[in-house]
Image 1 (cartoon, rainbow, N blue to C red):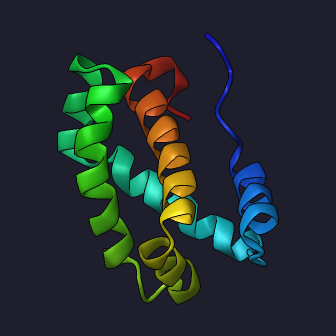
Image 2: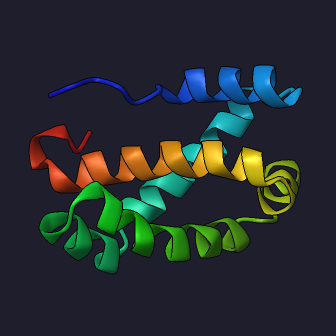
Length: 111
């Protein structure tokens, strides 16, 4: 398997460097929670088993925003940036999509 996903701590580094944010370890937990919630979403579980990552991404895009909205109180800075900055949203969504799909489509890679 080709290893091209960015580790979460590296995602924080990429976001901080690219977007001038100052996210830290606490913010990393927010992304961990999004991944866990997505991995536990039945519709995504089913979609990952029968679709390519591109087709999976179509459903993922619809669900990931609702996962952010559900957690707005936990991290308003990330939420606001995600909702208002398309470039930031694209980087975060691409990473989350890759991580969730990888975990759901390969049972041996679930943790």
